[in-house]
Image (cartoon, rainbow, N blue to C red; front, side):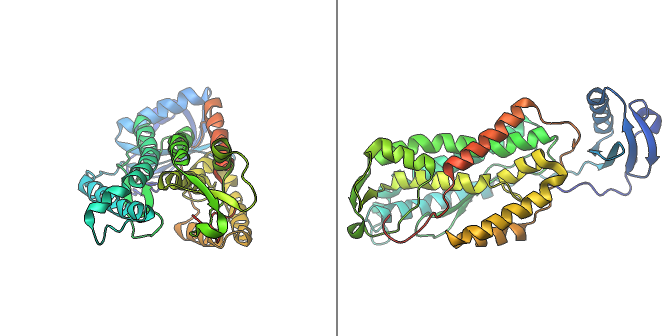
Length: 355
């Protein structure tokens, strides 16, 4: 997300105009301190319009003694190069087709026509990942946030063929409410799409003896365990589900949803956590990272993810309006995200055994 503006040459709107809505105690080149008059929401909106009409990006911050406004000229954004999105998407189609074909015991490297066997997996995983990112994209656009189309990440990973996808937020998020709605929209939509994909995949899956099945053993989230039980019932000891590639795509969809909803850093859940906890978000982030390190007793990947999140940074850019509180709908969406995290989280995603 964009950092706060640095514009030492910025000229503020006429101070008397600002003082119509705010009791000013301090005014510098690109900083005004004081207290917004009651009713705060009405006068805050008037101040937003005032700075926007001056062609400026203004951050409104609540402090211990009142409010602050930090502002600068709105940056000029170049049009995104959408051909990059298209190339990456086409490349991801190829890599997921390859993986899907290999999962169906076909080798498209020796016979390219056998790529067709990879369509079920490729279509399923791209549908889940694409719906997740488009959920972010359309929510961002509806809320006035400049966002790019999804960038898919093709990789020659033998299990997935992709490292997922992301969108780039090119402008500041206007409010804490927008942070929640943009942050949670992708995981919720991806979760909803992953459910029918998993149901279809499980309908094409079978069962087998664990010792004879081979492959990689996968942990189960609560939602995946429930859907498996509805399909197969209670399985005897030593018998487990042998996943069809479509079911595996659904499993991956749930796993990716859980990773994104972790309430830390620059992840989707991290955006929601910042909107909810505000200035208490930093110690909360550190606590979550500590839990992830301890989760290394279940899966060695959790400490790796904790280090990666720390490298990417815990500092969260403020929304333009850091004053307006979350609405009831925002809080419901935040709780919905937490519920989905609980349903999709897997303490030990990968083990030894079968696929």
